[in-house]
Structures are given as structure tokens and as C-alpha cells.
Image (cartoon, rainbow, N blue to C red; front, top):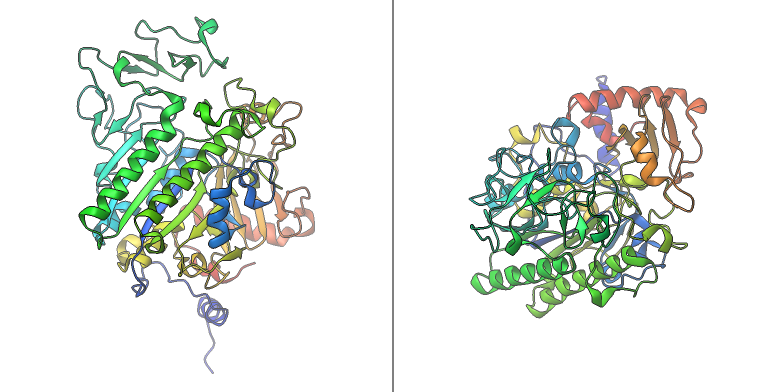
Length: 536
């Protein structure tokens, strides 16, 4: 019998285990199942413990819970990064954000981060015949630099695969505080020109630094720029008064626009599938939910924002029911990164939090390499196709591209697949198996960690920045935790999900192997595809 090389042997083992992912450069067989509509509902700064079906119950989210009850709830699903821009980049491109040196948290006037014409989730689905739209928070840059907000704002979502878009350009704590409809600012008055600067004070509007007496919430120095709607923002804005958003109306506006798009698509051509990338700004600061939700959660404005988010989910699902397309639509609900209670504004969320644990049983939150930064709620629902239940399959949000490609019946070209970190985990998403990835990377403000099976390795030099410690510090903050430092750490998450016991000294061989694997994967997405089958 001929001797088998290690790669062939590992692939044979993987096949026997029921999991043999395609090697880089190979294509996945086309899907023969019906092509569903795809609705991704992407929330902001929502932690594992913020959704009541994940076990906390302090804040009730019945509409999201219903998606979990009739769909599949994942307990080991991760964003690729612990901050918003990198996670959003990965979800749409299928690539880890650290591969793009510009993929960090962007200012509101930053150029478009994703190269027009490149392979993206929306561009691939559009090529497969889908209509595509992005609605809500964007924060992936716009234009090519030096944006003129009074003219056509391009390139943007329409140049990377979306047929239509209706956006909050960056974040709700950054200027410009306007809606961008396609390439144009909505309600633009050209006699009141919009000017934006992140470098110097411009215009006559007061700033939070100058007039703290005008603020609804006091803010730190970073968030003490131009005051709009009683909130001081990051950056400075002049003009554009008629185009300003009202924070309390953001969720209603985005939900209404999404419902209008879905309804129009179904009336125009009910046989053609669609993809909607819906991004809620809840529960990112500044937190100003609609007055009808204020005081209802018992956990301050952050908890009230969760109720508003849950209402939005209910409205979108009700629309699918009303149009008779609920069974024809695959829904994914998740969040861009872990939770934070105080992130620039003194809105009382920390004081009103009570005993609520936003990150669930995990350490840390937004920005951090700890589990609380990237391990998030992840629910998949498609009646009649997704097996209801709970899954511990290891999933990354960047896998949505490869999985959706299979679902659409249009495989990713082999030359493009070779540059992707995305893996086809569709059988796990549908509940046909609980075996998905064996390995993934997660990125925090201090570096990149590697997960293989139940092991997690944080390399040397992954020091938590002081500003992250400050945001999560403070007496009574459930997200506060010791920083990760200059020495490497190894955790076994199955027995220690809270990362309380560093077991590197007990397993130095595993730590050495994971360190080597991390270095190889950061250099080449295909260098260790064989590791999907099993190590360590």
C-alpha cells in the first residue's frame, strides 16, 4: 500500500468525519436547493448576553427570540473583529480585515474601503441574479477622498455590488449627520452647503467643548465636536440643516425604507430573489431610542435601544409574512462586535445596567481580544429548510460570502476563491451538521488571536491599549477585565468559556503549534486549509 502524505491523510479523515472543505482554488458544487431571498440583520455593539434567548432574560427580545425558536441559534459564532469597520469589511468581502491596512475604524469622510469591481457578497449575488440593497449604518468609507457632500457622493455601495442604498454614512456619533440615498444626500439644500472636517473646527455651529450646557449627554473630548440634535459628535460639520437626521427617528426611517424596498421588489418581480443587507445603529452610542421605547426595559437607554431593535426585527418579519414570502427568505441576525456600556457619552447606561451581563458568560467586550469582543448572537432562520435547534458549530461571519454563493447556485470562481478567508459552512447554517470550521482568527485592538477547535491562543505582544481599558474599566462595569499583555496565553474554551485559566504552561506544544499556524494564516489564507480537518 502506498504511503499517504499528511495532507491526503487529513483530507481522508475529514471526509470520514463528514467534513471535507474545498481546498483553495477548487470550486464548491452548485447548490440544487431553491434560491431564497437573503436578509442579513446586522446590529451594532450587541453582545451575546443582550438577546434574551441566549440565557440572560434581563432584557426581553421576543421577536429575535422567535427567530431562534423557529430557526437555529449558534453558540460559537464570531465576528471577525471586535470593532465595526473591520467586521463589516470581512462580512462583505470574505477576507480578514487585517489583510487590508486601511480596514480600521474610519472617520466619516474616509474614502471607500472596498475596491470597486472586487468580489463582494452583494456583487456575487447580483451576478447570480439577485437584486441587492444596503440600508442603515455603513461605516465603510465613501468617495475617493475629499468628498463634496453637495454633489454626487461616489464611489460607494452602488459600486461594490448593491443596486440601491439608503445609509447612515459612518456612525451615529460621527458627522455628517445626514441620510445618503444612493449617491445623494437626502433633503439637500444647496444654498446651505455641507462642509465636513475631522481636522479642524469649521462653521458656526456650537461644539460640545464650547457649550456643554447645550448637551443632552455630556461627552468625552473625542465626542465633543459639532452639536447636532443636542448631541456633540466626532468631527465638525457646517451647513446641511435641512438634511440633518433626528436620532430618535433613525430606526423608524431605516425600517420603513427596508419595508418599502421589499414590497416593491415583490410587486415588480416576485420570482426574482433579493438580498438585503440591513444595518441597525442600535445599540451604538449616542443612544436615543424613539420616545415610545423610553423607560420600558428597566435598564436605561441602552436596554431601551434593544427593545427598539427587537421591534424592528418584528416589523421586518411581519412584512415577509404579509407578502407571503416568509418561507422563501433566509434570515441571519447577528452583531458587528461585542458590547460596551460607556463609549464616549454619559448617558447613564452603566449606572442603569443593574445585574445585566451584556457579554453573557464571556470576558471583555467591544475592542478586546477576549471572547466578549467577537463571540456574538448568531441566528439563522428559513422555515422548512433550516433545522430548528441550537448549534455549537464554529462559525465566522466572513463565511457568509462563500455559503451564500453555494446557496445562490453560482460558485465562486477558483481564482477568486484562492484569496478568500471565507469558507462554505452552509450545511451547518442549515442544521444538517454541527461541524463547520475547525479554525478561525479574531481581531481586537491589541492584535489577532487564533481559535482551533476548543483552543484559543493569544500571541505575545497583544497588549490591550490603555484607552480600551479605560472604556471597560470603572467600578460596577461587568465588561471590565484584566488586559491581555506581552506574554502569550492559551485557553481551553469548552471547560473555561470565561477565559479565567491560562493553561499555556500545561500545553506548551499546543501553544507553539498555534503560534506557528497563526503566523502562516496571517500571511496566506490558503496556507493551512488542511487544518480545517483537525489540528490540534
